[in-house]
Length: 453
Image (cartoon, rainbow, N blue to C red; front, side):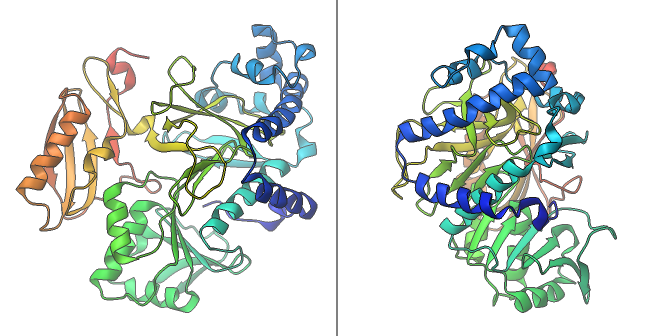
């Protein structure tokens, strides 16, 4: 978790204006959203054509003339741009920095992502304000207010350079009183030191729990097994990883609180959030979201595609048609039961890194859907070493009997059109290979092994 510094977000006039905008916009018409995005996209593209080296060259290459840009054609002109791959940004981040970028007070954020190769992006004043107001909207839906106590729980590494690092007995954690937060490293928690962590929870009683689903599931099971059940969060918000159905079932069994998912990026160009009615809402004020196929063309409602995002508020380092490498299922014109008119995405499937591959060049994501409705699964992980078979690691309870195993195997086979075999391996526990996000699918086959790009 990147440390929250008030100075990065605390622009009172901008915050107030954006806060009230987002309150009103929850019931806008489609035409109002379209008009808002056009009003923000046009100056962003003009800015890119004049100030950002990468886009100055790209616009010339594809013949996109800034003199011809206007509110009526700005979306069509945006779709002329090729998708921006993360590796292009990783290789030359300076080319995406605006020449006048310092005017927007940029802050460098470095993240290793899933590849282990550092990626540096820049947050600026406008994108930080939109990020904070978007998070506030989401938390407001969840019944949580900024200033109330919350716990951030992830697999991460604490170092002596971490500010606010403290201890209580054998518990080691971060207590940031400025934002009334706790931060636990789930890798450090075990049955021996659990009582000390529990005392910290009872002292501060965090109302909201956010973090990695795998870490939350681990803590929930440890507390239940130890009979430490007095503290319960009022709302649970997974982040950074996909929340799988078997994880949600275990968490809900221990903590009967709403579990509301949300999706965001370190690159500050997309934000989705789930409301209590279950709808997965796209925040169109934040950016322009597209769900496209491999050719960059919008998919039909109900179809799976790449999540492509254009943030509307980062002028220090604009990223246009950025391929997030996440997969999602497009929605149609349906509306959520909550009454809000914000557009929807049906689901976020997962990352390209969560795919498995077959000899015939097929790629399969969303493998967690095979686990839907299965009983007795506490943890699971899929490991692919070759293009013919997948090892399924399982931590189970007695409810996972032979019938459940056969039904799971059949669901997995159907998911991959019977192109792979599956071997079940039962474990006492599944430990992730490195700190950070838990990888539900570990494929050591590369996409190029399949003969496809």
